[in-house]
Picture 1: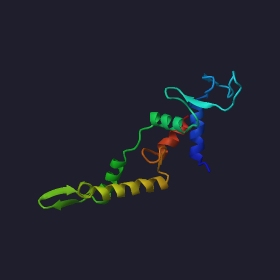
Picture 2: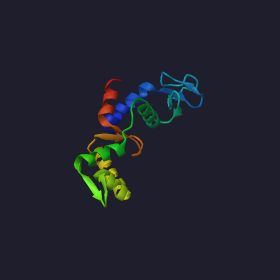
Picture 3: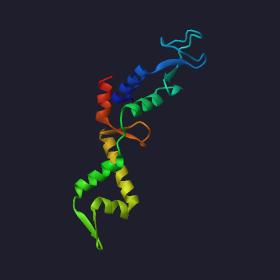
Picture 4: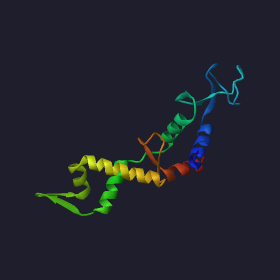
Amino acid sequence: MKTEIQEKLETFARKRTIPYCSSDHIECPTGRCPKCFSDDLMTLHRGYGPDWGLETAIREIISEELTPINTDEIFEELIRDIYPETTTIGYLTYDTATALRELDPVAWDLAKSEHIDSLESDEQVISLDGGCTHFWTHDLETLLEHE
């Protein structure tokens, strides 16, 4: 089942792409090829070429319009807010976030991943590429509203 935001993204992408006939290699703005009369058309996003479906066009358009969030910064800021004190190791003093990140990078990455997953579950962030790149949901909604 498609979510409301997925439907809005598809509508958004349709406005920025052109139907394209792969057999005749022509644009078909009416939704039907004037040469072969096919309505089984690809989508053409200028600068990226034709593609079946809208997923690639959506990803490319969003990456052009919005800046992805830096998940490292977001998580580090969260840890600094939760643990504002410093940590002393021997004679060296570090902020706690730096100490945690440097002493156990595997646990740090796991906790960061879990935090981003929770933001995604709460629909505060969204990923269009399986979790590699995230965007703030409110930024995406603002972009879709102004389209």
